[in-house]
Image (cartoon, rainbow, N blue to C red; front, side, top):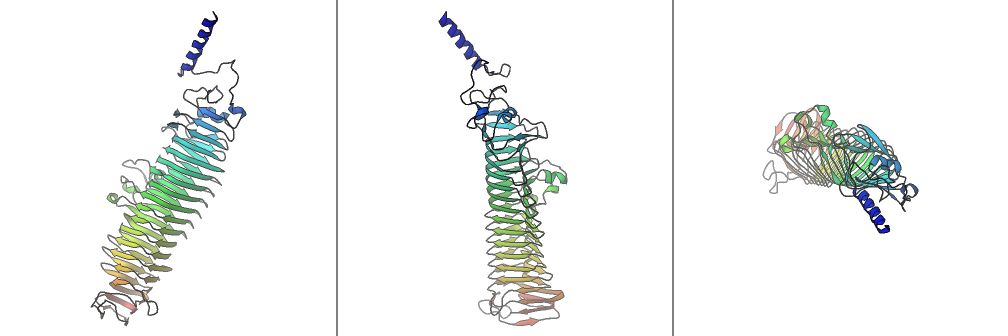
Length: 490
């Protein structure tokens, strides 16, 4: 009798463990003592979530809960919620949020998915916390304080991360795709450190409104003194990064590409923008528009007293590769190619060193009322138009550069250009030079440069003799033209 009773009890227990269906979920026996590791009493314990769990359980490894909502009710600061392979509701209603206590880690095992693509919800971190090895569907992340870490996380169909206040986010190998708005939004002194991963915009419909372009095309945006360092990332979106309002951004080893199926109403934006006294550095990166769609209106732009530094980077396929308006710009060892215009600098201070600019049509560099523009060691080749064109009250200094244009290599209109002096030779190759002076007096110093050999008194090496020409009318030579009240000193 004793043996039979024991076997019967064993059979019943085994049947209870095997029954993991939703119809008869597991329930803890009333007469069984608490587990050795009880999450409610120790921060060393994990809260375990499993599709086979039951929300009346204590959340221990052998007594898991079923829902993330219940796990968040049980978890304490310093504990980890272990999310086993499966799909779980975020615990929030549509367009609402669920709170993650301070110091809590959410870690997935296997293919652990939180949320649903058809719903929009938000996980709000009360303070610091961590996400690891998880997939979030239709679920975004919000933090206002503390340090939030995310490693090997994928977010799809939501707004990604929203960081405010003194929140500090450290993202490693995070992918944000099918974004419905902006992938990462930073404001009010928030900081983002993102290394690895990708941002991919939501597939575009054949027809959308202009508002939809901004709602569904954002990569990373910064405002109100926010800061970010982003590296080793690919961004595939109509608008990749926008920094404004005294924010500071650095983009390194990044590949930025424009979707090729954009409606025309959305295809003329800027890939990377700095405005409002923001500081933006782009290093060792590539920004490529979609050539079949005409590319971006601007590859990179800076305005409103912003500071832009472009180093060892490439910009291609845009109407204008780089545009600056009332900004400070430094371009070093970079390539601007296959754009209608290489760089447009308006009322800005710019330094361009060791770079290559080639355009299909339009000017290589257009300087309008430039406060100070210094160009050194640059090669400019244009299919149509001028290599360098200045207009307005502009100050230009050119050294050790190779400038070739179809209509002119350098065109100076109503300003001053220092292409070389007797004490500081230009050492440029310029073919040919145009000077325009329609409204004001223009003057060009052009000593110590190389021109086409045999033309306008050049010697066998193509070096132009030191001759000063002044004109109140038009003078033309084989490698220069002077219109109006211009003068040139060779």
